Length: 121
Image 1 (cartoon, rainbow, N blue to C red):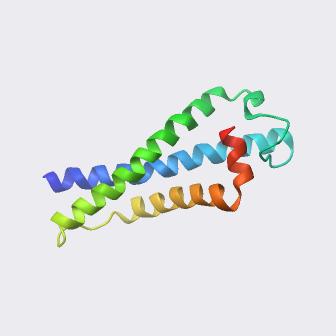
Image 2: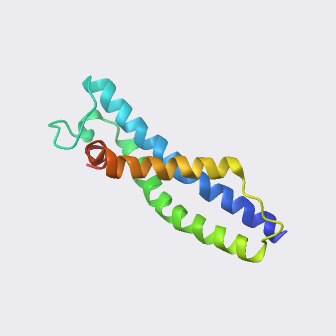
């Protein structure tokens, strides 16, 4: 029974980074749609002027949750692999969603930093 609860927690923690990434892309898409171009850091128009305060708040909350979920997911993965080597099977969907969320963060942090910085501005 404990294994089942741990697997559900593991799956839930794996989905949170993707949900954050979707909120990030939503802000970037709204900015692109309203401005007519993909905004980057240093753009004279701040995200605050787009009147999406609720989405920005959600994005900030999800970002903090994603940081916690990232480390929590790694910790739960190590625990499950340590104690339940033979019976633990990764939830492939949660694993892929986790990878998409984390990869999206890394891409916008290191490959396209101007776009990420604009959203976080």
